[in-house]
Each structure stands twice: as C-alpha cells, then as structure tokens.
Figure 1 (cartoon, rainbow, N blue to C red):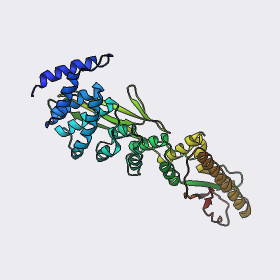
Figure 2: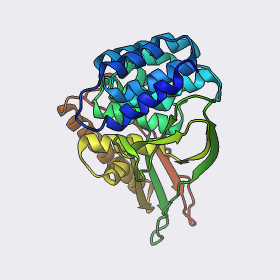
Figure 3: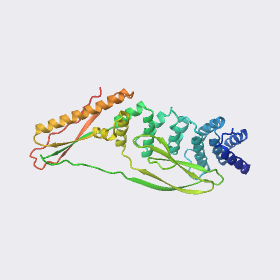
Figure 4: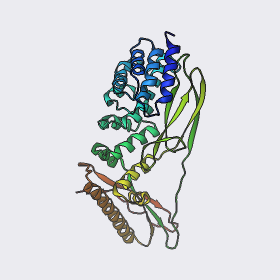
Length: 352
C-alpha cells in the first residue's frame, strides 16, 4: 500500500529504539510527516502512530493541526477508516504528552469524551470545556472526572456551581418518650457492559481509552477527588478484533459534591455529610419543647455550614450571591399523639 511495507518496517525499528537516549533520525520524522499529509486515512494513521512516539517538536505541532482538520470526522461510525484514524490521532496525542488547545477538542466532546478529558487535563485554559462536561446530563464517570479536574484547579465558577447544587436537609424523628430513633442506609450498585473493537485492514494498532473510578494494575490516575478517576487502555492489534468491557459503579452525586467541600475544608467527608444532612431525634413531651429543640438544632446546623463556607473562602474560593437553605423533614413516629406537630419552616443561612 504505497511503500507501506518498507515504511512500517522502518517505524517498527524506530519504535524499538525510542526508549534509548538516541537522537531521533530526521528520516523517520520526515516519513511520519509525509504520511500525515497524505489524503488516505490509512496513510495518515501510519503517520500519526509513530509521531506520537517520536517526541519531535515538529511532529507534535503537526499532530495538533490534525485535530483542526479532522473536526468533520467527529461523528464517524466504528470500524470505518475515519474512525480508526481518529482513534490513532487521539492515542498519538496522549502518548506524545502534547497539549491540544481546548477549542480544537470541542467538536469531539460528545463522541470522543474519554480521550478528550485526558487531553483537557493538560490544558490550563480548558476550564470552560470542563464546566460543560460537568453538567448534570453527563455520564457519571464524565461528570466525576470533569469535577475532579476543576477541584484540582480551584475553579471559582466550579465552586459556585457546586455550592449552589448542595441540598441541605435536617431530618427530625419524633417519638414518644423512651422510644428509639431510626437509622437509614443504602448501598450502591454497578453495571457492566461488554463490547468489541476491530481495526480496519491495514491500519496500525489502535489504543482505545476508557475512564473508570476504580484503579487496576496498568491504569493511569487522571484526577483525584472524593472518588479518583483513572484511564484505562485497550489495545486493538492490526487486523484483529478484541473484546472489552467497561464497569461503572453507581454514583451518588450529592455525596460527591459534599465530598468536594470536605476536601476544600480539610475535614472528614463523614463530618461534612452529617453537617449538610443532619438528623435529630426528639422525644416529644410538649409543643414548646419540640419547637425549642427544632430551633436549636437548625440554628446549630446553619452556624456549622456558615463556618465551613467561611473557612473555604479564606482559602481563596468565594461564591457571591449563593443562597443556602435548610429544608426540614419531620418523621412523626409517635403512637400516643393527640395533636399534630407544628409545621417546621425552611431556614435560610446567612453566609455574610
């Protein structure tokens, strides 16, 4: 396929030497450049494949430019030449360690989200892209990765969004004197899906990328957070088909949000969880006693949240204009009740 056998042999030989501290020959770089400028997707893929491993400044810039030219291919179907080229291009950029400007990655956010996030992690100017990817409609692992990356950058718009999304509750369990309270609980689950991938005939090996929230041997840490995010590689050899599966545990997004605030305040996440989702057990003796305990409990919760937010502000993050409100939940478990409990109104928290 137009000098391909000789070129492949040369690239494989160069790949075997790339781990050694030997200068990269101009010949290999020129061949990669020539193929990247080809009009054939298979040739371009064979140009991108070694370009990602040669670590040449000239080729790195050429790889970046390929993303601009490849934007119309973003919706390519699996198993097509165009799809295989894009997969090779993303792998080359990741392997090369280059920073692809966020605006060049924007067209690929929907269909190539995982490698896009890996590359966005390198770009200090990718805040707007990460804020889009953390929207509620995003898949759990995408939402988690984007938020973790924004946490690491101490993003002001991100912090304001996180704080405004927190739901604050105070659950009052009311019983007759001598009765115990109740303890609730739950557990997460997971899903597992199997798939397969195949490279079109004549293409170089393709590496596909997946994001996971549990690390295994060989995975690479992408972003730390209340739950860390890793990326995992699946190599599809030339002219072969491989099966792969992805597993994703269910994610409690509200618990993760509270986990971010706990990390910013440097307190245990359990402590922050109890603060934002407080529970109080009241032994009912009178209406006056009930109202007094409710008032004291909600006042203490509000003060604790205010102190947490103010401590985060001292670290440089502010969320002007955000209004927080405690929403009460009353569980009346009295068996000897003669009168209904008074209505408990929500309580606003003054953050100033």
